[in-house]
Length: 191
Image 1 (cartoon, rainbow, N blue to C red):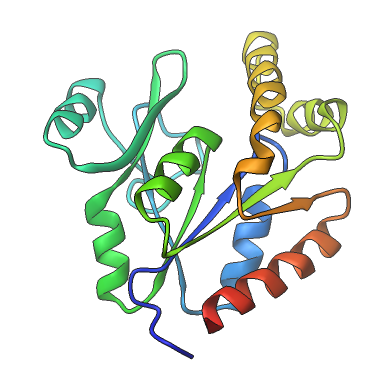
Image 2 (image 1 turned 60 degrees about the horizontal axis):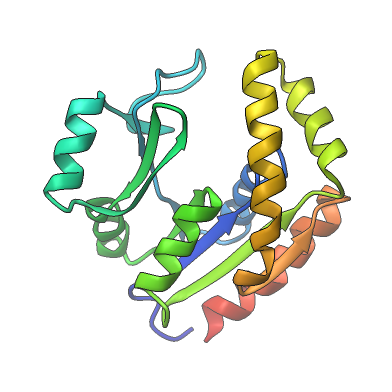
């Protein structure tokens, strides 16, 4: 394998499309991949751990890091809820001679892709339909009616960006989508 130094794998999709499931699968197949932990201003969910799932921080700390230009990308993903990729997180992973895997929203993925055009593979995970996506989100049991509506509206908008990414994987069957992702990522890591 050629040098993996400073490569980045981006997995993006509307919420509920399956990007996290595909990301977890890829990380089992390719030990060289390392999950890039995002910063977030939202509260941790019951099963989430600081420094494992996210770097949880208050809005004031997040804004300070924005002003100090410590983010490779950041977005207000939902009203009042900010997420971002810290430059220090990318450096941490590269220092381990690994490839960061960014499981991030569409706008954040576009920013990373623009900043690191030579070193990235961006994969857009597309759900079969907005209706299927809505059903997946409802089945999680983590959404209120309002948050569900916000996620579905945002997903409809994000689907229009699929052509901005290197590859699109239709996730109508998770096993098939994972197999397709393995082929794409294997090729990316070899080059």
